Image 1 (cartoon, rainbow, N blue to C red):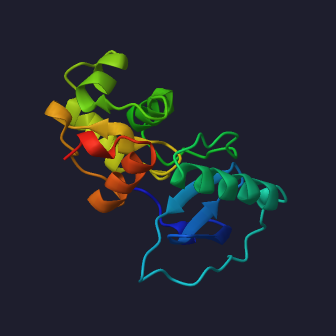
Image 2: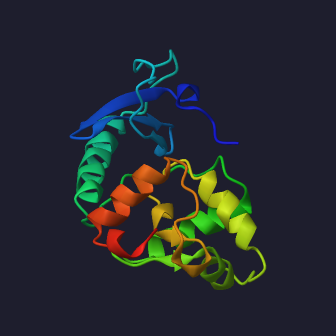
Length: 172
């Protein structure tokens, strides 16, 4: 299970034209990026020391989010802390950025790329547990037959992100 953003020393708001994202940073880097929500809690930091790199990481995160929302490449990214995932989840999360902007893959194709062709459902579960679904592009992973499948941010977000990459016309 993905840790909630409140478990990290730095939680910062990231304003965009579609709402306020919540970015949570650990000592290793960006660990969680939550989609805008009407029920979002106000940003706070804990009493734990905040890494001095956080302002620079947050600037990179902000630029990346704005790029993604317009269908552009989000590079460069801040350091990503994926330590909350299992080894298999981390392998899926490392594979997803290999899908070029504007292209999609199926859960089966990702499983095959990882050398585990029967692990389609496990790939789907790893996508659902992705703590950085905007930066680690699980929206580019579709179900069999090109169906949308699921998305941790909701299907409307998946459609929006695919549309920003000019992929929205061919998905249902």
